[in-house]
Image 1 (tube, rainbow, N blue to C red):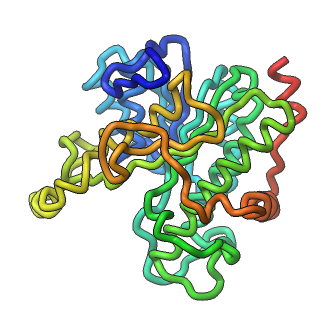
Image 2: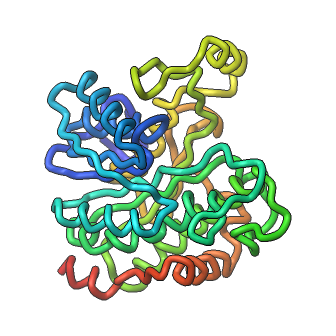
Length: 315
């Protein structure tokens, strides 16, 4: 497969590789897991609800009977849960890739906090920052890759997230878009930091375009949209795609051998289409943003990435 060729429905053989996916019980996370397992990878599905995890694992097994899948409880809004899940994942051995997908897509109308932090920022950003730091050593040992999930909505955002926890001026839209802008900036900053410390781990970002459940095939216990949802979503068919197709960009960023650290992937037509190289929104690339967010995340999570230990683990 050349650099310019990529068939999302015919992935390279991933036998012997292991990936952890957050938010794997539905939507993009579930379909990414299904695609990885179909290519022969061992996949660790994570989520905060044990019943949903069981349903997702059963669904993968129905689709791919010989799939190598395991489950792990993980709530990215809870630092205790993040640390416990990371310890379990480290004990399970090899880790080639980390897909940081979990998130609050429909934020509450009023600002809510968990552990003293704004809910959306804690779930979408802080938990993933901490998890990636906790799993950096096994990723480095496998010379692996982490992929952070952004959003095309950041291209509509013109403001720097100088108040990432929205202590003032909270709105659901601002909470979601600002969290995705922060995610993208952190993905780019992480790649710079990893390179600077000589750690052989790549950090990339991907976005799914406009992917809806109503345009996605039904999967028992995973994707069961109502007739009304299907009707409404199909009215938007020219500018939308399925969650399966939305997962294509995430999976490409995670496993394409030609993908480079610090790059972004998304649908060819922005909202839909085959996965290709994309450009992060200008606001997410502004000088100093990634550095400021990195320090804020270290302070909020009490997690410092073990760059030197990770570098030694890879040697």
